[in-house]
Length: 117
Ligand SMILES: [Cu+2]
Image 1 (cartoon, protein in one colour):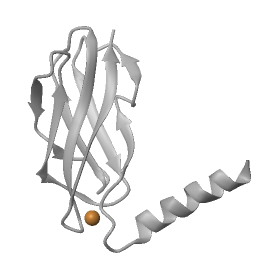
Image 2 (spheres, rainbow, N blue to C red; image 1 turned 180 degrees about the vertical axis):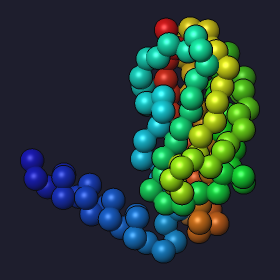
Image 3 (cartoon, helix red, strand yellow; image 1 turned 90 degrees about the vertical axis):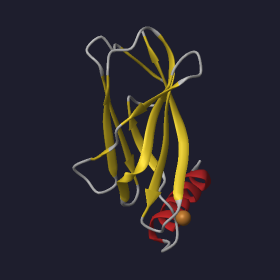
Image 4 (cartoon, rainbow, N blue to C red; image 1 turned 45 degrees about the horizontal axis):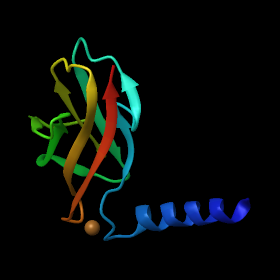
């Protein structure tokens, strides 16, 4: 019970304090695997464990048919946050696809799935 928790804490510490560790996604909005209503558009926000450069990052929403809707990434209020706004989306399964530039000069890439009802 305790062992896995200790491991997770150590892993988190080593990734956030390592001088050359690139950014790791902490939380996403829409939350990963969540189901949302997107009638009035979607506010996308990604929070990483270290500073990212929004101007040299890219954000997109992968549509149910696989095409990508490019978004304009803006710096969030916190240094590790990028945000963007998308227009209303019809029901279906989507992914936030990101490629963000970390302070160590590396790009962190990934995707976070969500569903629109
Ligand atoms: Cu790195």
